[in-house]
Image 1 (cartoon, rainbow, N blue to C red):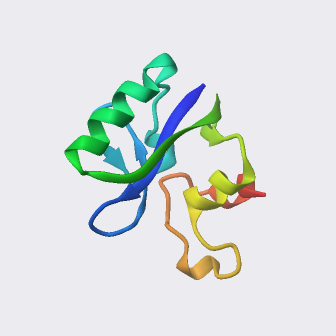
Image 2 (cartoon, one colour):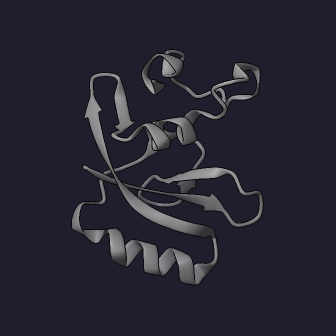
Length: 98
């Protein structure tokens, strides 16, 4: 599974491609398959996202999970200050980061 991530051009927030627009929540991410480069080119040209790229992920009964630890941390936020993390729709998100 391939999903897209980047940073919101206005706020710098980590974002995830949901098939229509960019979401703050990784659980909204959709599999882009072989269309990653096409979507990335279009979104970069529209200037809605900065430094977007495709990553590997998995989907299980708990939702979408980035495959690499770096992307898991980006999905949730700082690991040293849980009070500053993004509060995702997934209440157990902190359990799968590390």
